[in-house]
Length: 294
Image (cartoon, rainbow, N blue to C red; front, top):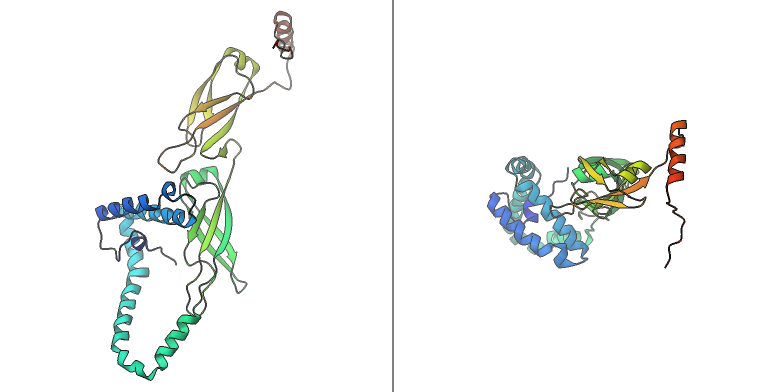
């Protein structure tokens, strides 16, 4: 199991810190690595995501307690063991005049090679990306086996963004660290909603008489139903914008929900409807093909 060292990400040596210290560290680091400050710097963008992920866990007392148990088991004890090892090296310093041990350690350091990163992508629905989800992926290992891991998709992830899982890439050589796994998220449109940037688009199907007379229609957004007013004379292709009901913008706000109007004609009409359409034809002067004088 690979556990990210959230304390190290926020600049701490261990987990002996309180919530206020965590909040102060997050504010300083978020300002330093914010995408608006660093432009199109992929490393700064990845660092900013890791900082946000660490803060979300450690700023919540309940989540912090759960994480601390993992940290103590997977990270804390290894740090203690590493410290004991360093102390042992100092004690053994006088024995290094033989040269054998020192030469062996130097050779190992020179030969250590970090494993390659693995890049892959998975598809997530708009709902999974908006609310967050956990998906399982399986990929081949270097020995032609297979490996399955669970990937946590953070709520509000953007299309084509990558999730980095440390140490899940190809294994290192001669004691080198494993590479990382980078997973690109491809957000898939559903039957009712289409994602463009942070705006969501949906089709608003209305009848000719609803277009002519005006009506109120319920529109389904990603997390609620919204009633909208369709004005008189609305045309196919017109749009109705519902502010703040789109996709998450990553700053605590949301884009817009944009309803695209489509006027639908019934494929089959009864005799009474035919009479009414004929009557409308007789009394109406409307001609959509009439060329306007310029």
